[in-house]
Length: 284
Image 1 (cartoon, helix red, strand yellow):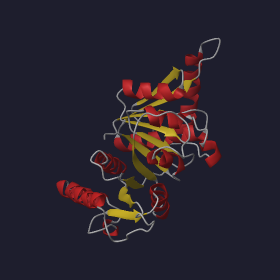
Image 2 (image 1 turned 180 degrees about the horizontal axis):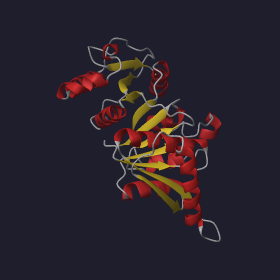
Image 3 (image 1 turned 90 degrees about the vertical axis):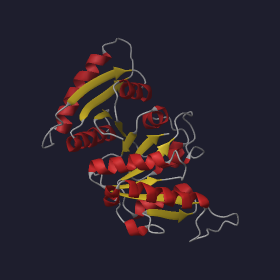
Image 4 (image 1 turned 180 degrees about the vertical axis):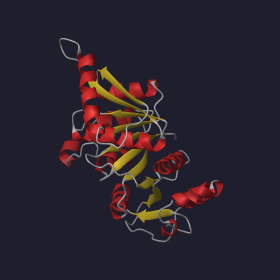
């Protein structure tokens, strides 16, 4: 995962403005090219593209004016259409490495009828997406959730790249489901988790510098930096994020599927809406 071309999708909300600031800080840190994108819905009368671009110039000037410096390569772009579609289209067409977008906290009742832009982008995007909360610009402690699958290991690689790029610290978690009797077999690892521990060990040996990324290498099992929890997957991951005061949760995200009931959706989809921190989704 590279961070050379960033797209910040913004609007007039505080979440949108935070996305712009976070993307600008990331671009400054890594010398990346940043495009700030706004999408307006088509209305009668036309002229929305020019109006949106002019408004965006004013917003960028105001919001990024407080920074010590702006990214050297800063572009502005406007589009007209459905935001969840146009944001993904722009990022993929222009070879973006990361989309940064705001995420609004929603109650369980609101999530039952969720159809917002963040959810739409996460389901469509072939580009990794960083969803940020209003006013939360610090990105330091990163937690990656792993499921032990071969494809899921690509999430670990992406999380390590991202953590290295921001100069942060990384922790990894996997969750063992309860046994048939509802009790957790603490201290006893399933074959899946055993393979995951071995894969992480190989990953660390292949690149010794990776060991410098881990926040607490001794916190895991069998000398591995992997933390193993037992119980409900979503609940345990969120508990780890809160107890470790993580700034970013990294999850693998399967593309596709309609907007709708989050509680009945995938683990990643629930985490993307319930995590109390920024969420980085890696398309699978």
